[in-house]
Image (cartoon, rainbow, N blue to C red; front, side, top):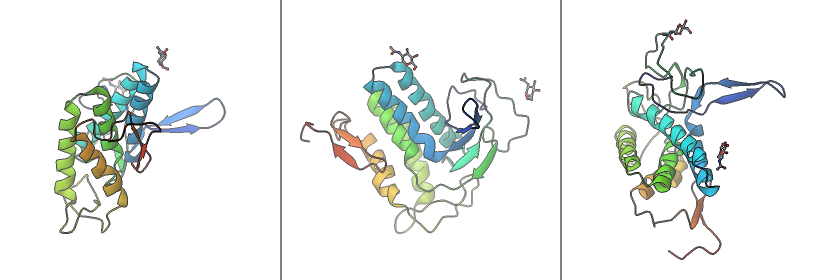
Length: 214
Ligand SMILES: *[C@@H]1O[C@H](CO)[C@@H](O)[C@H](O)[C@H]1NC(C)=O
Ligand SMILES: *[C@@H]1O[C@H](CO)[C@@H](O)[C@H](O)[C@H]1NC(C)=O
């Protein structure tokens, strides 16, 4: 449930209490943002647009969090308010949210993670919609301006405030994953085509058997 009633789906936490009861906790995590690309890629593979649409809504949820967080960067984890169903619903703030849509920010760090741009990359390659390049550019500019140091880039202590305080650390997945997906989304789609390459969890590319030499 978000102020602009955006038609998005944020992956949450499912608690299986017993064999028949699964409870949803609407806890958003940056790490879970890869599921947008996963659904879209799966939908393309089995030729089912329903899954591509799930992929779009999940990717758009993470993009929503980037756009609506005060510094243009999604925090590590936060609680949302769930709509009654998976359909978009009107915003109804009963707790007075300081940042509307972010009910409670449990971890305000940004560790230079790749999962959101990963899904934006897959959506761009699968749909060909150049709006995803604009989204990626906004994300890149926000991240670059807040995380840049004299040497490279550093994680952020708290993306929900303006202090700009950095963590004295650059995770290797910034280079292996985040920057690779940013680079590829602004490259011609033939560069590491998804018809020829598979990216593993840390975005290391594996050439498919029989793929064309590029
Ligand atoms: C696509 O997936 C949805 C969700 O699982 C399913 O309801 C639908 O029947 C599938 N469509 C096709 C054409 O397989
Ligand atoms: C908003 O939520 C409260 C608490 O769940 C509920 O009592 C109220 O009817 C809701 N208002 C609207 C306009 O849906």
